[in-house]
Length: 250
Image 1 (tube, rainbow, N blue to C red):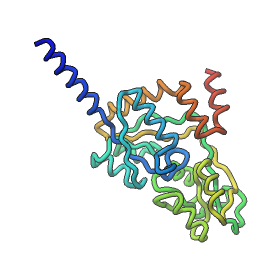
Image 2 (cartoon, one colour; image 1 turned 135 degrees about the horizontal axis):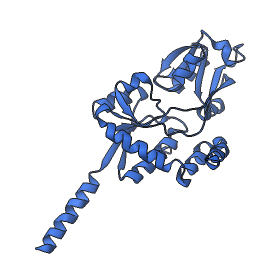
Image 3 (cartoon, helix red, strand yellow; image 1 turned 45 degrees about the vertical axis):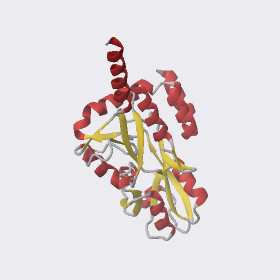
Image 4 (cartoon, rainbow, N blue to C red; image 1 turned 180 degrees about the vertical axis):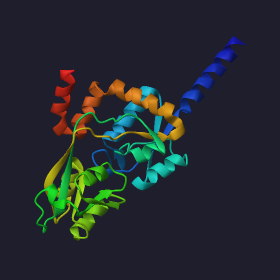
């Protein structure tokens, strides 16, 4: 009898562990946060979420979709969480719960214009139409610069319009900007906008505030670990030295 009870407990334990899956939505068009490499999802956010999942005992199941479809999918319970370089804006906080920000180093955002334009610095784009991905953290940076944000489903679509001179500029994360400058013709960088406190956070359903707290605690737990530092070095190598220096100050 004891053997049967023990076997049943083991089976139930196994089923319980197997059932602890977390379906996470992302948009693989935002290098180095999340992107496809040899048809595999990679990036800072992808590896960070896997690290957090391991810390908390979740098996992460990924779903790639358009950026503007992520929060609707979350609210419709098609996914359990969203990580996609998404900032926790006051407007979004009305609809979903967020973890604390998971980026602990400053961010560079490139101001890119058409090669034929006469713009020299970001201030020249005040009142001008500047492309950003809908819902991205660059939206607020564009507004703060006095420019008019024009929204796109992806930064690639914004760059294409910039090449065709349909908009005046694009503001995009520095590492992503470097890739566009290498691979797409007819564009140039004129300035950099510094973001001293990147606000990228993980989104959860409003009723899952406890889950958001669970992940926030895990973020705090791993932020000073060698594993987190390796991710910074791998995906943001230009930020690694300053990140380590800030840790050593504390």
